[in-house]
Amino acid sequence: MNNWDEIKTAYQVARMGTVSGAAEVLGVHHATVIRHIDALEGQLGVKLFQRHARGYTATEVGDDLFRVAQATDDQFNQLIGRIKGRGTDVSGELVVTSLVSLAPRMAPLLVAFQQAHPDVLIRYLTGERLFRLEYGEAHVAIRAGNAPDQPDNVVQPFVRQRMGLYASKDYVERNGVPKDVADCAKHRFVGHDDDSRAPFNKWLREKVPEVALTFRSTDGRALEQAIRAGAGIGFFPVSDAPANPDLIEVFPHQEEWSAPLWLVTHVDLHRTTKVQAFVNFLKEHSKDWDM
Image: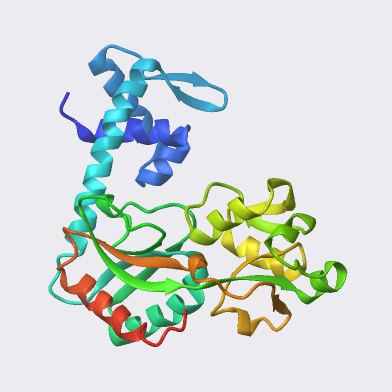
């Protein structure tokens, strides 16, 4: 068995669950997909899939093969990501990931970088998932919380994001504000739906009874919208609060709520021209960020 194309085809069928889905991903005709699967099963002498009306499901033997295929595919993607970053000019794809709360600052900065380097294609990824630098999923990451400790990452201190405890005017008119921490149990709070490592979320879990966390989400944007809409008291970036005049600060800011942000690159890409150009640009243009 020496035909990687057939293995790759079967892996995509297992991943997508249908021949048509795999054909679309691979950019081939569905007949080619079926021919590759038949050839591979004939070569191995086993069935890799159970066929049914909804599509294809991998057999136990198929699962074993596809786990190896996935690891190999990941390694190829890692290699491609590294190769893309090795050029001597500032061009090609630049993938940057950060917390969604940084988007109002990062998007204009990325546009400015692209204007300075018009041959760069920007991909800006936000969300809760940690994109894997070791597999080439991103060139530069801005992460919060404890310093990332993956051995192949280059980690640099970036800025600290100050968080404050806010409520909307509508909420305050209806419910008032807590007099102190002990009074929080009488109020409604907006908070993260899992065990977020952010310092302000840890404080919320420790100080506020779970029953008082009446609006929860894993999406930072949804939490901010809920606070604005009057769902309860919650943490909001101090730097963004002035742009929301309907917000009222409930308690004075505490430094223990601040979250350190880290600038993370992979060791294999850290010294490439494109990554160095962006990292230096980011550091220079973030000096005046009032976080």
